[in-house]
Length: 116
Length: 91
Image 1 (tube, each protein chain N blue to C red):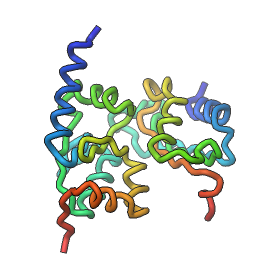
Image 2: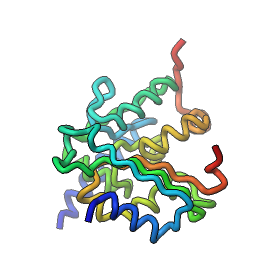
Image 3: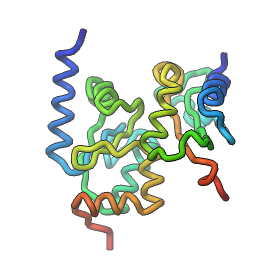
Image 4: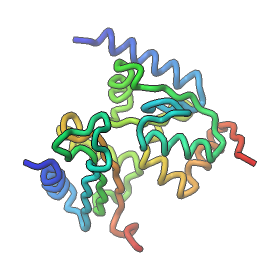
């Protein structure tokens, strides 16, 4: 079994989501998303003026599979806020449209710099 | 069995949906990584079911992901989901 490897990947993910307020596991980079769903979440975060760390899972097959197990969520993108899994593209878009995402960032104390 | 048919059969059996719309959007992703030559890899699914009542968004999607776990491991490359209760499904 690959338990040792799993633990290693889980540890890396845990470190990332603890070290950064907002982490997006995505395909491609924030500047060049390589998937429409990832691009949608990047756009929403940009509209809200939220700084985030993007992790490109296409660069790292270990993390690509590892984050799916870690979150128990079978798809990418995945958004973490203050160490907690929030959801994928559909959920982020729905929360944004309902004003709930902005509220989440406010209540969790995530800094925002909305565009002027 | 065709993937769309499997999705329909499994979701209908598990969720008794009041409404179930399945759109195969694979053609829009042809040639894209994960797209299969025969299509049927990218889907958009809207489900209206009373089973979603009282469940937050994450739990609703997890429920659907569980039902389609086998397909998500193999055939389905992308699945856009809209999960609503009958009360929420008002125009």
